[in-house]
Image (cartoon, rainbow, N blue to C red; front, side, top):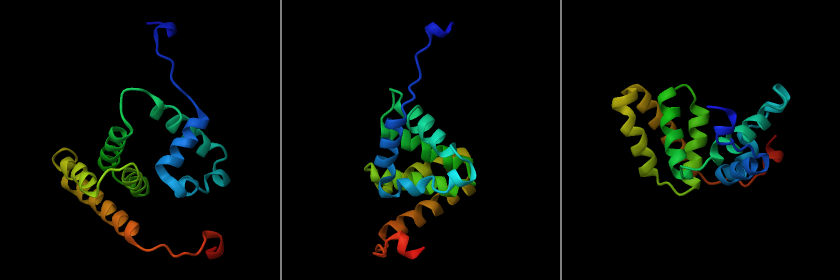
Length: 143
C-alpha cells in the first residue's frame, strides 16, 4: 500500500470548533479551558485533530461516536471529567438518560463491575448537575 492508496484524513480546524460548540454548547470554552496557560496550542491540537479530524470521518453517526466514547472512557476509568463531558454531550445530542445508563450497565461484564459502577456514579452526578437550577450569576462575576 502506498500513500496514494490511502483515504485522506480530514483535518478541519473550523469544523472541529463548530462540532465542539454543538456538542458542549455554552460550556465549550470551559471544556478545555486553562490548557493554553499550561500547554500553549494543546487545546487547539485536540480540537483540530479530534473534532476536526476523527469526528469528521464518514461511517459513524454522531450518536454512535458518543456511545463509543462513553464505552471507552468507562472502560479506561480514572477519566471522570472527560466521561462527565461526554455524558453531557450525549444528552445534548438527544440521547436519553436511560440510553446512557444502559451503555454503561452493558459494559459491566466486559470491563468489570467496579468500572461500570464508577461510570454510573459519573453519569448520576452529571444528571443531577443538569437538573440543578442555574445560579444566574455569570462566571465572570463569581471569579
